[in-house]
Amino acid sequence: MSLRHFLTTQDYSRAEIDALLEQAAAFKRSPRGQQLAGKSVALLFFNPSMRTRTSFELGAFHLGGHAIVLSPGKDAWPIEFRPNVVMDGEAEEHIAEVARVLSRYVDLIAVRAFPKFQDWSVDREDAVIKAFAQYATVPVINMETITHPCQELAHALALKERFGDLTGRKYVLTWTYHPKPLNTAVANSALLIATKMGMDVTLLCPTPDYVLDKRYMAFGEQNAKENGGSLKVSHNIEEAYRGADVVYAKSWGALPFFGRWENEKPIRDAHKHFIVDEAKMALTNNGVFSHCLPLRRNIKATDAVMDSPACIAIDEAENRLHVQKAVMASLIDQR
Image (cartoon, rainbow, N blue to C red; front, side):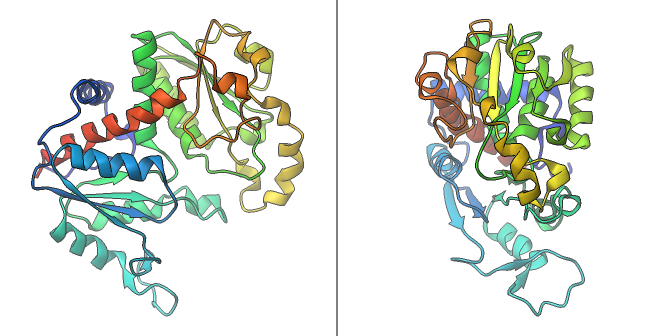
């Protein structure tokens, strides 16, 4: 049997996603188990984390396993990922050695590595986690790179808890203002999972510059076709919100300005009114609101929205713990 990684949900069928969500729901009802007894997972953080680190460490503990946290360049050696390179820079060791050595120590490797934000044609290749998957001889888990598949599962579980069957539900993925240009990972992932669950998805963004990478738009269209949903782009706030069952907010940078953020800033600054507020939520079909967190209050969403019964962001955050246990348990079965 070939080695299975968890790098993107696009590698998983709808049936496999449903099975992971069912297992996650079971872990939520009964949190402890022994699926990882005597096993270990290396958690490599190239970028900061709160929910991801906490939920993975606790998840491994809840299932009888042990997590080791590493921050390359801080408490571990800097790593080189380019092939055939003369290593005369900051990196002290190559991924070819790192992944293979860790594979002899641990049973799972999980990686969090954000884009460099210099050249999207380079960042979209997702080189760091792909290199781990290439050289590792144990399963590799994506803890967020240019997608965030664990967040996808937590989001889908929270929605299923609220609605049950998600097919045909109107889902709005809305861009929101943020003073900094952010990664498109969560937006990419929200688009993937919402279309995979058969929802009618509207990507709401200020201008065509904020439409997501064509790869993810194509995946979304494919998912919608296969699962009975739809996907469209809108720049009209009222039209998008009206009748929505779900509003999911995220800020992201415009890809045509990738690495040239000062050129994009005037456009971003002109659309602060994309904030999720009570007036917009009143247009929905008594819809729910969520966000991956962290969220800047009164920048992305108002206090009233965040503190309302319609907000399921805390439920979604809790579900990270349960879905990640389901992912780890499913991958450890290969060992």
